[in-house]
Image 1: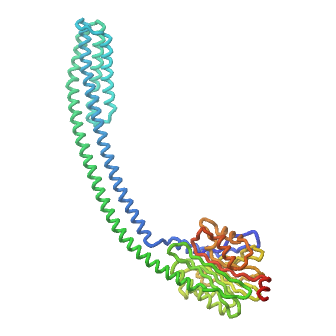
Image 2: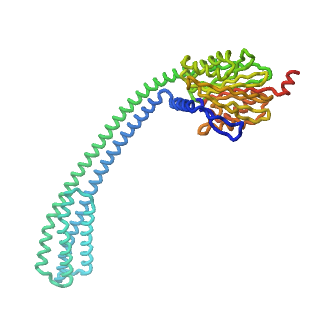
Image 3: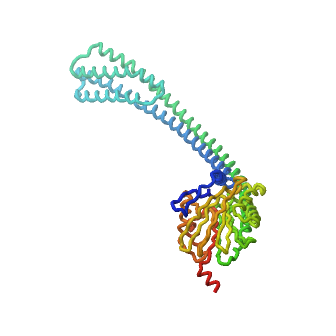
Length: 504
């Protein structure tokens, strides 16, 4: 992909870059976003397969969690009823123990039982406390509503019974005679409590049996639900595997077609690049072209060097915004159109204007940036124009690099009636002119100005154009890798000493 034209402002006058055309910048941005959003074939299908697998897995897990929760709830209800039955039976035993304590106390008071009164008092107190504790624990349990009502109805009667039993024991052990009324009241509550507690015991037993049956049924239901969910998930996974098999077949076919397009695009791209650079007395030429690391994608970078009928030399670096066969095809059409127009037109800006107008006739739908320069070998003068492309770099014989001020017009194909401005510079002996594409200076997560600064900072001077290419590529690309295509074209003038040596 091609970058937006250079827009930074630098403090040095030699490094000042003019703000590009805003419409061209917007057009480039839209095309870059659309290009970046294109995924590999089958990506959405694979995503759908993954989501379906996740849904099936979650459905089985959800069914298992729900059934386990139901079983746990049933077990909890059964445990609470069993605890209530155990504490109720213990309270029933304390009921009988208190009845025995009252009888023993009356026998001790009448002198018919030789037993320590303090021991009986302690036993009575223990039995009463145990009775009350059992009743209190039962009321803390989570029981069915009917059991709660029955225990609530029985509780006042139990409290009265314990209190009257304790009172009779105290009176008898104190050597006093309890009144007939007190004994009668105690007997009435005892007689009423016996059948009531027995009825509640039977109710608890029946509830326990019923709860056990319900818990067993819920466990069986849980097993059936998990089994059904597993069968459904198994069927779903089988369908998923079959779908994935079919999808992978479609994906393989798409990748095969994509690979075929890629091979065709690479072949076309290589065929349109110069096989060798021309020999120009007093000048040295070198170029580097690296494909981007995009897997199956091929970009639209190109460079060209060709002699003109005037004895001048044309130099071109361009970048089609797109990938694969359409980009490579557009690159070839633009390259051939530029060569044809360059034969008849002296002005680089006029040549770019004619190529821009021809994009609609050639049915080129891809935008492209391009820099076209014309070198007069006799005067070392370079005339050049830019269609949305990055500024050229001049590295002096002292090793100092600088970006040439540029007025980049819109990219080719952005505006039908666009005009492009001619620029001119003169190379000194030993100077090197570098034309490049944005892949050389763009970095992930970094502003392009950072890459341009690194480009200017590559230390020179260079012995020849090849040496400059090697130094620039090592400094800016190195082992870090690159996403976009990288193209670099270097023209270096001979120094006076080199020229004199060749003449000799």
